[in-house]
Amino acid sequence: MVDNREAAAFEALGAVVDPELDEPITDLDFVQSVTVSDGRDVVVHLRLPTSFCAPNFAYLMASDAKDVLVQLPWTRAVTVELDDHHDSDIINAGLAADAGYRGTFAHEAENDLEELRLTFHRKAHVAAMERCLTGLMRRDPARQMNEMGRVVLGDLPDDDTTRALLTRRQTLGLPVTPDSLVMVDHHGNDYAEIDVPLALRRARSTRISIDGNAHFCRGLLRTRYDDPDRTTVNA
Image: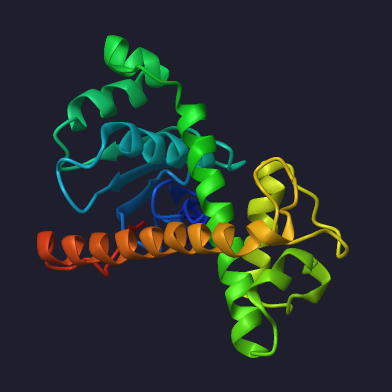
């Protein structure tokens, strides 16, 4: 019996999310190829929509990709390389040496990656919260915007949008019990009724920005490469 380890490696890469777009790199077609040799050695090539994508975002995705593959019980050597980026050589050398972000970029690494990661986790939570509450109002037009501050998780439908919100709440350490308020800030604090409409409008702006950036990046990727919808998985 032959293990389909290339497919398993690709599936594992689905846990890696573009921090700005809040979508898996596999869905965004950022995974150019996955190769497994000798049953245990994995080589992955990543690509991005442009050569000038922010180096910290690029490193974060490439580093996360290596981390999820190293955690698979059967991998021995894991190589992740970023292609066609202006900092490809620097990033690939840093990944190969397990130098970390600061070790890779030295004095250019002004901010810690975890701080950057937290910022985008918070934005993803705001966008997911807005999607759920807007969907609720669309399904029930009788609901007023200022009432959204009283909606609890148990009021939401059991669908992918709600599950995405629960995942993002768990990432931030926010409660996910059915009686937990949906509309809370990054620390779990609720909103006064008078503040709910403005907060929800701001959340909508965040969500529109994320969705718009994702659409734009997909267009750039299609322009840059002839086959953005094909990921090569080799034995």
